[in-house]
Amino acid sequence: MAIRWKMLAINMKEKRRSHGPGFPRMSIRSAARKIGISPATYSRVENGRPCDAETFMAICRWLNFNPC
Image 1 (cartoon, helix red, strand yellow):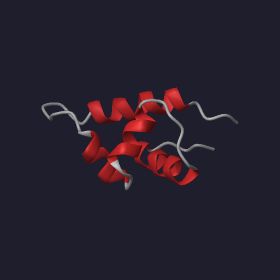
Image 2: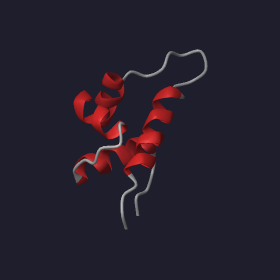
Image 3: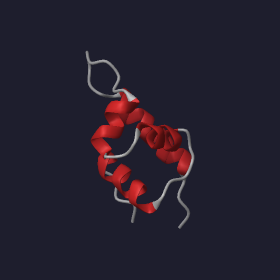
């Protein structure tokens, strides 16, 4: 199964933007901290670039997404 990096990126952007009504959008730095990755890595993946398996799984957990 191929990973659809663009779809992952869209889901990441959506989660950051839907932080809750009346709340400012979650920053990349804040989202990266919650996932346990660097802001640079978060930014690359949110822009549709691939990442390693460990990072991918951490992002999936943050998104409450089962990759299987």
